Length: 108
Image 1: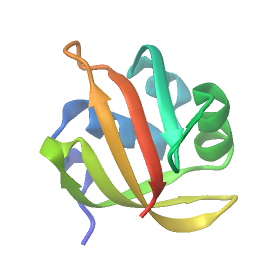
Image 2: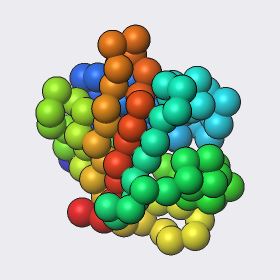
Image 3: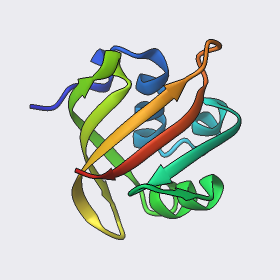
Image 4: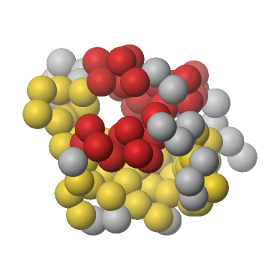
C-alpha cells in the first residue's frame, strides 16, 4: 500500500519525494544543506553526479510503501528509465533548519 507523499510525516522528506517525483532539480537542491552528502548501497557518491544520473536525467520516481524513524527512513519502490523499478530504502539526516545534510539509499 503506497503512502501518498502529502501524508509523509517529515516535512523535509516529503519535499524531497515531491521534488524527485516532479523532476524538479532546482527545488530538490534547495532542500539540501550546504555540503550535503549521500551514499548509494553503502558507498559515498558524488551527490551532483548521482542525482543527475539516477534521478533527473532518467525520470526518477518514488512510491513510498512504509516510513519509520519519525518519517526519516523510507521503504520505497524507486524507478527510473535506466533500471526500471526496484525496492529501495532511504534514510535522511535533517538539520535543525529543516534542510537535508545527508541521505543514504540502497536496494532493500
